[in-house]
Image (cartoon, rainbow, N blue to C red; front, side):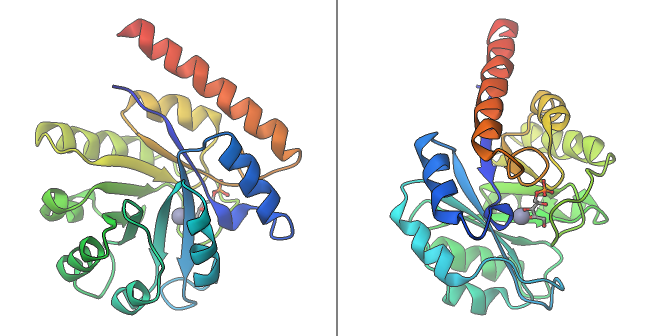
Length: 228
Ligand code: DX5
Ligand code: ZN
């Protein structure tokens, strides 16, 4: 079944109106909350902190946590997750991928891998049996407001065909510079989860953007429904 899940990137929300914008997202039943965690080391930026992650536990919406940190094991020790949340970390990490996946499972969360635009897709292949989600970075990680990298289309097709050929039940997500054109095209290539930031959601007149996105998705899904 075709799905178009929206995962708003909360680092892009208005920091002075985060609570209000979260209420709107929650009321409109957005599928996930995307939470970028950075350490000024793996990525020269800081985004959201552990207190925001903890506070989000009051919402029923599952978290789609994106770790851009050197020390994944230590970060996992400090993060307040709920059963069913996704925690993804970078395949470029210098810590043990197998151990991190194991630790995330032990937390009751669903492990995922994130891959940067320059990293060969094949790097993910050995882990397909152990993860529940893959996020393809469609910008260089760490900063919002960047433009979509167009080679991502082929990378999405490549990973999707492997997921299907190996009959894996893995959600495929994209993260960075995602606008209407990308959603329309990538949904056809089998992307399930769209991380939405400043490109099409967190910009002027937030509530209008929310309505526009939900209406767009309705049309897209009707289109697939007819195609069967
Ligand atoms: C980038 C972040 C994203 C995203 C933000 O590392 O993971 O949250 O780029 O969305 P845009 O690119 O639309 O501002
Ligand atoms: Zn992210």
